Image (cartoon, rainbow, N blue to C red; front, side):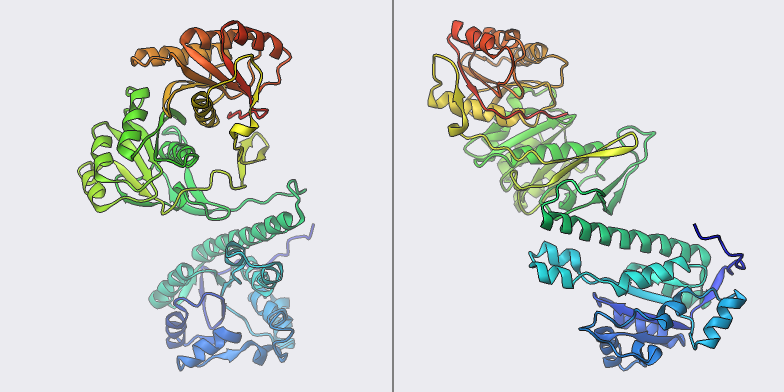
Length: 527
């Protein structure tokens, strides 16, 4: 570990005499350069950035004028030079640094404005391997890190918002404060960390390495929240990974700011409703679906979903998989609802929701692909868990019929619907369904029999008859008691993964009661 030199303390106010600008995204570049030039700051730049500044009639030097070396190797080498990094890293008030700068003709660089090659955008646009590699910036991150390390004297900017803060201070006082430079340095290191995380993640994907020795995660702040799950917990919302239709990229048309719990529940609802091809509605409360249904239109789907548990739906989240229309909107606002999320909403629906000023209305422009690959993260003490998203899709041809009686086509449809819902219910999960509608949902119990009992009880609470329904269990029945509970409630068909050492006992219990039962071979736990 290098010993810390005894450098003089940096002054609070640092003037800016020379700025190096080298940006890929040139939004606001010329305006910023003009302000700097008008303030007497010498401008140094590279390639296209220099050309854009010069085209605006502003005086600007090429970085090669400082280094004495031309830009070379298709632009791969232009700023990796001691003249540049010495100008960024030199501690102005340290005698040996000042002497080295004088001896080697190194002028200080007091402001660095760099935004990086668009690697993330190239990957998101489906760029091929060569294009992605060529958009890995080398000189930019190196300069950013140098400038950030020497924040006692250098202000470093990585986006237009940073430049705006610097220009505001320069116009007011002609200097930047140490507090601002520290803030900019922290942002700069976060930016290069995120950039490297994107590159390392992409490389791992190219190599098919699903478990790299080091895993980097980066996010971009969307929202600072008033609190987390509870008022004493701090919270924030970040966008991360490739763009995916959903709550992170949704446009909020109205309503109060989303809370931590709102976002978690809205995501759960929207991911489930995206599983269905026909018009569908999902109502979620505390991360679990309390009503799910399909219908000929959204109004029908919403009303059928609400029938499953109108009590829990109060203060819940509603997700639909079609453009919201007036009829559905009018039905939804009859019950107090926290959030409604949809791919889109027509003007008539928006007008209906406008009458409920606290209701949050989100539109996403599209549905997420329920079967696209991705990763799920969960923190634990001292680390985090990573797993692939559950993209399982069970089709009729995947079912293994294990009972004497085979299910009817209608029962197969009901079983698959119930199992799809069960995939999104906290384990242990039991779901009763019929004709594209949940009738009872038992979630998060410590044993499967209790989940079945609670699901049946809740159906009874709202006058829903389970006779002829399908029952889904997201994991195998370890004993026959849970299946017997479902049969006694009225289920005639059961779907479960199978795989218990007591499968034969469970199958025998189903045969004794004339049930049809199918094994999926796929468990869909959700913890």
